[in-house]
Image 1 (tube, rainbow, N blue to C red):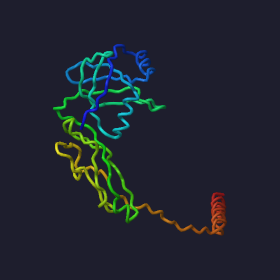
Image 2 (image 1 turned 60 degrees about the horizontal axis):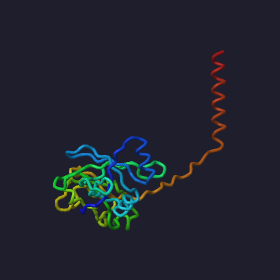
Image 3 (image 1 turned 90 degrees about the horizontal axis):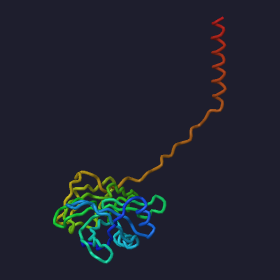
Length: 224
C-alpha cells in the first residue's frame, strides 16, 4: 500500500478554546501518539483530509505526515488512523487520533470484505445473501495492507457458507481471526405460512354461558 502524504501543522495551544478556534478555521484538531516520542498535537485542513477519505473510501490508509510549524518542516513519520470522532448532527470530523508506525514492523488492521458475483442460491432459488463479517483483522507490514478482500460468492447454494479459512489472503498477509467464523452465507427464502381462518360457532357461546349460569345456580342451592 502506498503512503498518502498529508501536511499538518503543530498545534501549540490545547484545551477547549483552542480546539474551538481550530474548528472555526475549518481545520481538524488531532493527536499523534506511539513510538518513542511524546504525543504531538497537530491540526490540518479538513477539506483536504475528507477528499483523501472519499478517494479511498472503505480502505485502510497509511498516512505520511509532514509535520510543520508555519513554512518550516519539523519532522515526518508514518501513521494510521486509530479513531475518528464525528459530530453526531452534521457528521463532520471533529477530532482524530493517529498512531505512529514503522514500515518495517507488522501491524494489525481491519480490512473490508467485499462480496463479488451473484450467489447461485440467490439467483436460482430466491435465497438471500447474508453478509455476517464485513471486516477482517489482518497482520502484515504497512506496505502490504490490502485495500479490500474480494470473496467470490457465485458458487454459494442455499445453506452454503464461506468461512474465514476459505478466504485467500495476499502474500505476506495473515489473520488471527477464528478460521471457522462465517463471513457470507445464503439463507433460504422466507415463506409466509398461510393460516386457514378459524370458524367460529356463533351458537356455542350462549350455550356455554347458559351452562355456567346453571352450574352457579346449582352451587348456590347446594350451599343453602
